[in-house]
Image (cartoon, rainbow, N blue to C red; front, side, top):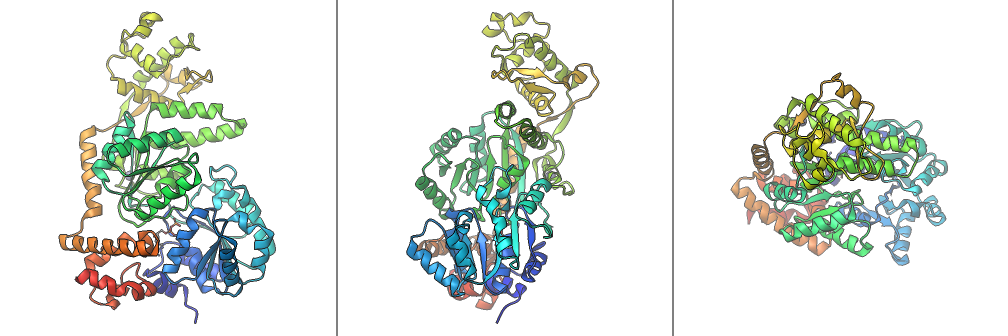
Length: 604
Ligand code: ADP
Ligand code: ZN
């Protein structure tokens, strides 16, 4: 007997109804059509190919670049009673042969394969000897040469269409600008495939961007106040920063692990596995980490360096709160980030077009940081989607003020102009601000900068306020970083208009710090933890039971049940196996395997 798509969702996965476009996508693929699926991270892409693979005859072939995660994905499916397996270089030939035989015998619902493996003659040959239900090309943006996840093997996947023109193909990604989308369709030869573009909103994630001063302390305070004991990911730009941040957090009692491409493979695998399996781990990582990590209970994603693009940022932050419970995306950013990134772009290899593209990406990111309106509106606008102000980002919750910074900008630009003659000296932002504020430092005396007409004309603003002005001028390209390698600030074409008083400049002023962190912290904390006392006790019992089962099966806890499922059980206190079946995340197989034990946990 074959089940319909909805029955499969309910019986196998234990979910009541489809989300968003899932149903339309699934119906389209079940009936043999190709599709390009764009959904935010955590939006529910996997079901879009897993269900058609179960409903259609044959095996669904899933092409995924993430060898290290195939095992977990397959384990999770097997827990649901789905016949899943993978083929990759981590197996010995005996294991691989068993999988191959199972495939040929038609005993698999889903088979995960890395692209480089798939494209070998041996594997293509194998596939042609079995029955294929569909091809799912996961992380399809890896085919894009502009993206930071480019994988050359992905380019070879256009071959699938030539060899198996009748088999439906789905390309899935969370990377959604229309340019990337077109590129994916073109390179994978999905010419006639409809594009299913979901809403990119992830309403349970609270977006927050703060001004950076002592970033490690700020980060620590944020974690301690709002996410003590929670699982989180912290993104840094460089390996050195990953290392130093992880050890700083460890020194302050936070269970943090490093992850970057410079660590050897076994350390990386061990850290990833601990992050997935242990509760409350914090991963400090470069962007090398995270693709395909579908741990549902990541409660925060923090960036302590400015991401290079909104697209990357949105993907990274989307790794928070896949379970739908409240989560935080926190970013600290400052003047130095702008200077550094502009310089990196100037010095990057690649032609003018390439650099211009990087520059535009950075500008969009800076626009997001400096906006005085809703962050989420800004983020979604980047993906051509519109929403009302969200009520769950920092600017909605505590609107920053805008102030007229025209005069301040003119003062700074004049100072830059005066110093420009001495370019080639190391006069950074700090020196510039000292001049404006009229500080008689040794360097100012040495260079006679106290005699400049701009000396002391900016004593009315604090050093921080000046940094903020500088940052915003750089963000808007009203100031530039010179190519001289010293980070000298330079005027731009557009500075002239400001100096002449042709534009009014409105800047963002941060709301007062104290009220801000306190109110934000209590709110997000309450939102996650608010279970009544008795239910909380049941939840703890259920969690302890789950930890035990997960350990004995050698899988991460969420593969057994998500937190959200255990919370619902703890709250609703089911009386029978039937009651349990009504809970989201409890399918037929899991109810059979774990139902009695769950009831026992709840009723003691
Ligand atoms: P993506 O691959 O798009 O990042 P996933 O496929 O991992 O997202 O799904 C995110 C989470 O949402 C998973 O925990 C999944 O079980 C859950 N989910 C997906 N679809 C549904 C649905 N229709 N009902 C309830 N939960 C769902
Ligand atoms: Zn908002």
